[in-house]
Image 1 (spheres, rainbow, N blue to C red):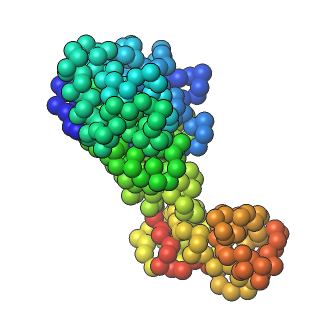
Image 2: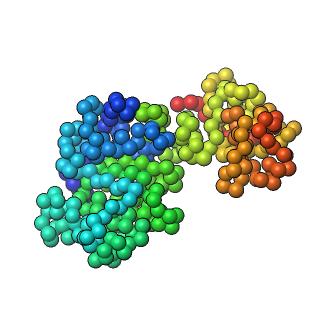
Length: 343
């Protein structure tokens, strides 16, 4: 369900909340979805609350489609918000829940019902119109919540961890609905789910300590992260060091070889790899490191050895008899290691 709402345009925001330590600049193009990611306490919720008008601030600015919304109250901003839980009105039918927004903003009954029907159809739940919220599954309720946001034809859509409370099957259905909802309007997505970011976001902005620490196209941030959180978010291990002719010399010593890199030797460099490709031995190839921690992880054992990380099977860990403090060698296949310049 797209829109030609005259207010649709890009977002330009500077969120400044000194008592929370947040100072974030955020730009979103008119038909762009930006994923806002970062550790807990990074400032993501503060940004969303400010954009929605739920948090009144004295500094900064929120400019949407050329309109200054900085001092505008939440219900007059034309912003749609889909949060973790649907929070539908229990005493209203699904159709009346979705029509509530248009009615509240001045639409007549027939127009509100038309908007409700169109929004429900857009996210694939038209058949639920006459149902009571209490009879819906979690995934159904969340799709209705998305329809409720769409029915107001928002000039900005805020998605605050919209699938985090759902099971795996329901998440897939809701992601499809979110893909429809984000089309034709600037969208900010807060998520801890890499699949959600890949499926919905054009760009990723990484927050840490109330500041932007990394941003770029989704594929670039996930494939060549420059911040610790982006690497963790994408499941990669990030290693800093100096470029060599063959790869990278990590800060802790040794060398990791890469078949694909263009960083001039002697220049600062980063390297990324997936920890499942790393090989741990007692006396094989790779830099020598001391094991600092062993952690269970998705049926594997995560071996931490300084900045290097390897995920090995339980059998491998048992065969090597690994314990913290052991000295091991960790090698990464050259074609699995990406070396690139820092941001």
